Image (cartoon, rainbow over all chains, first blue to last red; front, top):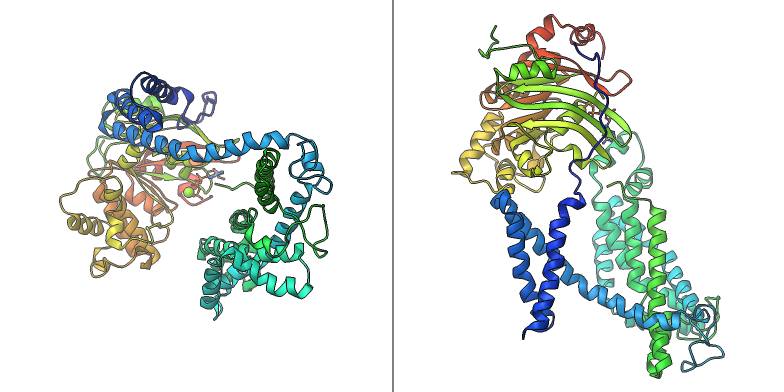
Length: 350
Length: 279
Ligand SMILES: Nc1ncnc2c1ncn2[C@@H]1O[C@H](COP(=O)(O)OP(=O)(O)OP(=O)(O)O)[C@@H](O)[C@H]1O
Ligand SMILES: [Mg+2]
């Protein structure tokens, strides 16, 4: 009858997974089409990327139609639209890849010298050979000032967002308006503001001043993003917590914020991305210094963007190579920071 | 022997017998050797069920025995859960819905679903919610307004909302929202309708309305309904299937004519369950 002599348990499968075998024809078509279009471009009067595209698009449409011809009209439309999206994505990906590639290929030259990350420019000039001097001072300065800005801005930005979405205080319209306007402040104005207050007050350039100027730019990004993220938390969750007798602050701290932890981390990442490459606000606040300094209050501090800016002005072969390496170093530093932040915030469940 | 609707009835228990049944009754849907896993957790084991066309089958069993999981496998919703896996086949018109050449979106259009928790689209009005499926699947309908009125009437909601079709779907009460979701599922005219405890948020009046609707719908579609309410199972279903997990993976204990399952079940556990002695 029932559960006597159960059949042996079959292996779990996932029939919905796309297998390589299923996409192989499409990939083959894309590759074959690309090569064929290349051949046509080389052999005929058509030239350049747009010429290639003019050949590739019809090949890919006709090929897709042939591949999906047995599956009906809906499947054909599906395949063509899918192909179109992949093609457009590929095209829009091209500038990003080419940008990255340029920075990497140009910057690797100088960056591959160990001294580039282990020494500063105290005793070398921008035109010296690449085995002398380095960007340690700029790297340390950038990390210091970005950290100062992040330490100030992350709590402040999240608190602002909590005030606007959770506390819903009387001033929330005003707060939101101010944050909104702050995101429109030109970065040089942020520098000027800190210059006229902190730098004039302390009577010297400093890393602290640079960090404060960056914080002004970072705050609106963090606050706005965190606000949008908090708005996505369903009210059911808040109700559930209130119904357990939790006060509002505990609800926010233990229910709402943990729910959107990875979103809050994203707001921080976007904020750091906003400021890491800023030059203008540092011009009048941290200025530039050739030696590595770890103190945020004792005189000017170098930064990767400012160092790059100076190197480009010298305009020699070696200084250009150094400038590219600086850009690459900045990219790498930001990449490492983001990877760490993502790892700490934990994987998203979805 | 014939059941209330005059279908020729036969006991359906295991595949072999189900095949014997299918020679006489057309299949609305058929599940063969269904297993389900969530990562390593084996949630459902070797379920074979035959759903005759235009009948109502009730799935009953204690909480956590895999009824919802089974239901979601029937219209390819299981795969949305990361790490979920399965085995077996689900036959619609003799074709396996898990065949790689099958477009899952078309399957879900033919096998509709009503969820336990009402989930109207909050940004759409009541009227827009009803025809949402029509719009999303780009179906052609003669008259949008007629579809709206017909589906809302069949779901037992028309009288309450006919004057505020332009209000947002979220502005309704929980029970009204659920009936709106049923109307939405009906609007695309599925061949099979899966319902996961559709009445758990409804008052007795709305429940009765829904049950009448189910009876009405079963003239033209195959309905599979999960319910924890034994009276409801007895009232609406032609066939019943009893699931149980007792420690291991969930499995089918017994299935057959509802009248038989409730009076002379072959398994002691079924008898205990339908009479409310455990679970
Ligand atoms: N998303 C999921 N991830 C992991 N395990 C799950 C998931 N959904 C269900 N399960 C497990 O699968 C088993 C069956 O769950 P299912 O939801 O199908 O039960 P059910 O019979 O519908 O119960 P109920 O009557 O309470 O709705 C349970 O042991 C459950 O813990
Ligand atoms: Mg369930």
